[in-house]
Length: 415
Image (tube, rainbow, N blue to C red):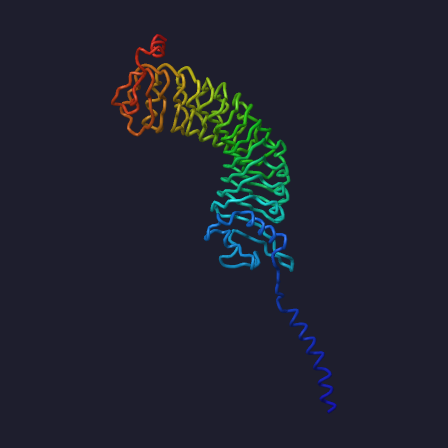
């Protein structure tokens, strides 16, 4: 009997110790759920959208709040991503990426509660009203895209608090006002598109956005001179504004590849500094008030320019012979200007070599065509409405010439 008591006395402590060791060795299970503020924000986002605009197959229709957003599986809460905490803390929503399904509604201020958000994409819907001021609370945002909606009002001043923002696209809305002068506080910004809105005013000095690669301010109402811009720019689109003055501020943009300043009121020269930018592939300066096209000889290590568009200006004088020294040039549009004199014979050799599009129509060119023009087969373009001796069997001559008795043509022939 005594022996049994001794065994029992040692058995229970040993059992307790072994149990404790086993519990410690077992992997702990983490039970976390979405933070209440995040769930509330998601509810408010959905509540601010007209339910009649929510398609049964849309992401928003999968937001079923009977389950936890961050623990949902399968086809629940589509368009939502969360972080995965390594402790017992709550999960947080990090991405809201709605599908473009024409949701109609407003952006709720509650969106500012999603303070761990890094991506917010609401493109291609029908959101209307202003951008909520609470967006300034989303300090971890790296990507903010709200293009192709019906948003109104101005850019919230608090947007400058989004120091980690790299990509900002609010194009295709009805936003107005000016660009905040301290937008250069967004030092991480690489892509900025404000195009197709009704922004106005002068464009501020943007050199502080030193990492910016793409800047699209097209189809707005910006006026005044071209601003100072960051050297890092690779794509610049200022098409369809009311900008004036010279191209001088662009001469230092050594990384620029795409440059579109068409449909403004820019004047002076399309100067050699801009045409000498070695990395520019496409230059569009059409529909401005330029009077001079400065082209120097680029036969040695010339620019990479492939497309030159300068139609609809007031360019005058003879066609620049040095265009043939651009070794990569394939498309030239100098239509609707005031060029005069003969077509350089050097242009003829390019038609069989590299040029595929040549538009010289609606000028005051005179004389005979270089002989190669008559045999050019793979060239698209036009020589119509000049004062040329242009054979009707040459495709580029289709459309006819100005009457030989026209005052403009008589004056050119006298010259």
